[in-house]
Image (cartoon, rainbow, N blue to C red; front, side, top):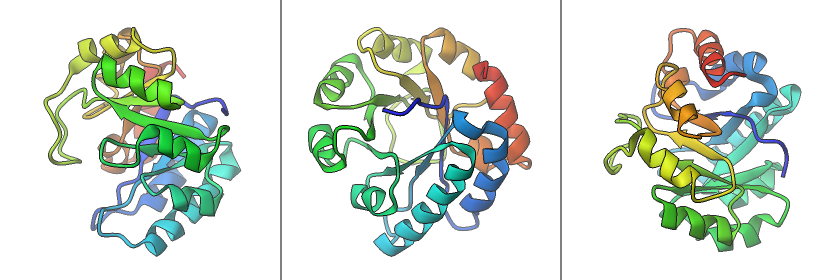
Length: 208
């Protein structure tokens, strides 16, 4: 598996957002410390996902950053992404690993230690753990687990744990102290007036 960056940026493709403009601002700042996870809305077509992912892979390549595709693993393969990420309602981790192959980066969503252990045993390269804090970016999420919940997962597995859900530069130190390898964000960068500055602040909080 390639070296994993500590700052994961999930694309925000909701109406009125410009994910490629955000990436163009964040990539020169974060470079190889950035992992871009291409996530599209449920009603987006595969062609739309493909077009965004293809352009994201090209942008990431300029800076040595990693591009993953959320859920739509066939799109990840089609554009030559480094791998993908699956959630609770996506393909099972073992099936996703068979689709992507043994060398791809495969992230899986986990919330508690037992599920995390199962995901790693099935082939997950890293875990996205949360939600850590309340967030308005995605609806229908369970209650936040906080840094204590992150620590419980960290202590159960031996792969990088990426804390997600309502993460800001101010909350990063407590998550890192809980053992998180890195953090995943959407609104903290995509919703910022200055995405480049927001990226730099997050990297600083991560100690990068």
